[in-house]
Length: 201
Image (cartoon, rainbow, N blue to C red; front, side, top):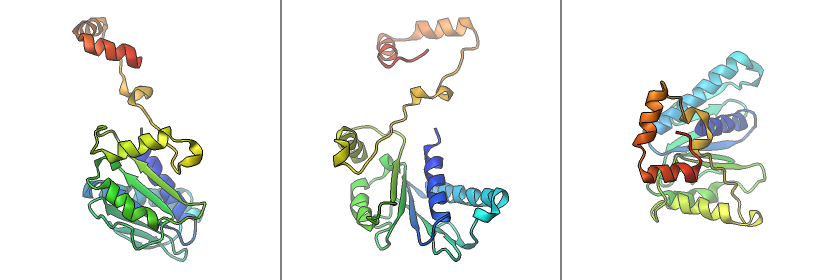
């Protein structure tokens, strides 16, 4: 659905257009961190082409950070393997990507959240694809508690994007023969799930 790209675009926009903003992106692994870095580079290049007046000069750009000259703003990139990511900074924007796959989600959050500024214009985004709902998946239980909480007693807004709500996760059959063959192959359990979830074939 592109949630990680949306979250990173928001992080980039927020940081590149304001002074003295420190943003932190944390990916689940090194490949994810590299992917986020490349997103920032792409945003920068496109903005430089299309809106140069909104593109601050770069002071530094590498796999660990993107710093803007004159504004004092920066985007730092780390992995969830670093349990102290962001701890020594004051952060205004945090984007944690694929958090359900962090090995030490709870410990990272305990270290990270005190570093987030208490100003009203701060932003923390936790996004992920699914990774189960067992006791070890502490992200699931944190978000479930936030979802069920009274909105006045939680700092979190939960948005769940189910795969079945997006057209790109379904496709037409080649012909009626394939459709019929597939329909006849469904087990009783699959038919039950289809009915309960309102799924197309």
